[in-house]
Length: 224
Image 1 (tube, rainbow, N blue to C red):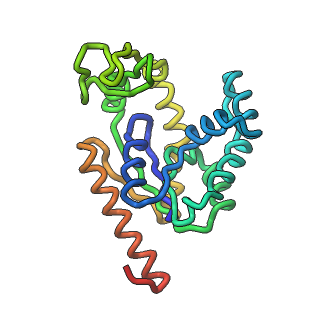
Image 2 (image 1 turned 90 degrees about the vertical axis):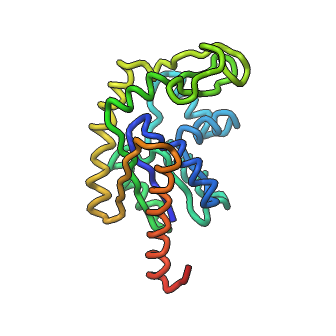
């Protein structure tokens, strides 16, 4: 099964993807993580991506799909995988399905209201030294403005400032939100409210996945 997690910035997609990956034994795949990995490896694709990123340009779809194609060839994807924040628009979704239609697809949107997203992201801090991330509303550091891991200074990332968050949300509403209707028409879309505690949200998502695993198995004549 391929699981696609949708939701605005700050909805908790990354956190839930990590939990699902451990529970289901399938990898979490984030295009951002793949790009950074390829850049660090110095691969041909990574070099091309680095050139774009250093110029402040968006990495084009052709390169994104080339990198995804290489990642999905790995053995750990044979039994399924979780896509975190991809596809970002209908065009990407259609192209992705044409290229990778070998698995049952399940789409889950984590829905969070705008005020909550802004509160979450403006409360997020990153360590200037080790890169550890914390949220001062949820996990207040033991020493004010100091990282619990290494004692480094905690700072606000540029993309967690309110004016930038508003721009990111605008892009999400215009480009990514239409995927909800797209997947609803395909009949593989589910929605969970992402405003309770992490474990409760995870349990809701996992219940949806388990129910659909049984449904897919019955279609094949298998038994769970």
